[in-house]
Image (tube, helix red, strand yellow):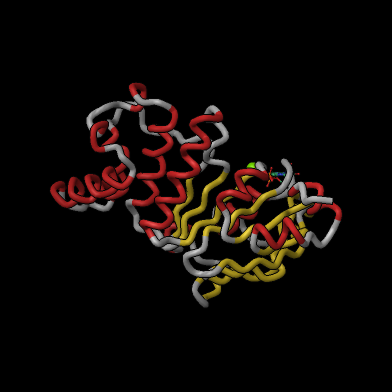
Length: 236
Ligand code: ADP
Ligand code: MG
């Protein structure tokens, strides 16, 4: 589905992504995990097209997309800080991108209802964001992303602003959503537990390089190096 081949990124003279090779298969829930500053957000922003690529290739469904503009990639991104439109209702927020495209009102309503059903927001469609809980707001942000029917959804630490009980609940909900949408997901977190519990495939990053990638249990039982062993908490 998506392949990064020897991808590099510089900020000025500082190389922050140092020749990264990653493959994510169609339909997978892939988690990029690593300590703060290792380059997770930079990688996601390059995949989304929000940052340029200074070296290597980005391949989506067999096509090189290095120079394809963000809105032509069929990729949606959900950020940690999800700025909803405060003056719009939940329905307005979720349907906003369709109203920009001049989709007829009745069709927008139909699609918003379908998305709200999946995200369990049906009873909240007429509320403003201020009258929602943190988890509900995050679901609206996800709704805004999935209404565009992306084939690839990128999440950048989407749960880190939520309290721990809600975070655990939202992990399960995101997994259910992944199954229902049959989309490919790339999910970024610094939280090893989140990575281990959610991922089909884990990519461990350290200082702009891939330390190891594979199935969670493979990394846990067969870490390739000391960094992965310590970071994942493999048994000694
Ligand atoms: P992570 O998301 O894993 O915490 P980032 O991708 O945000 O890491 O950052 C990777 C490195 O790039 C860090 O050293 C960070 O300070 C640096 N960096 C990120 N964005 C910029 C920027 N716009 N300009 C300069 N340096 C940046
Ligand atoms: Mg980040």
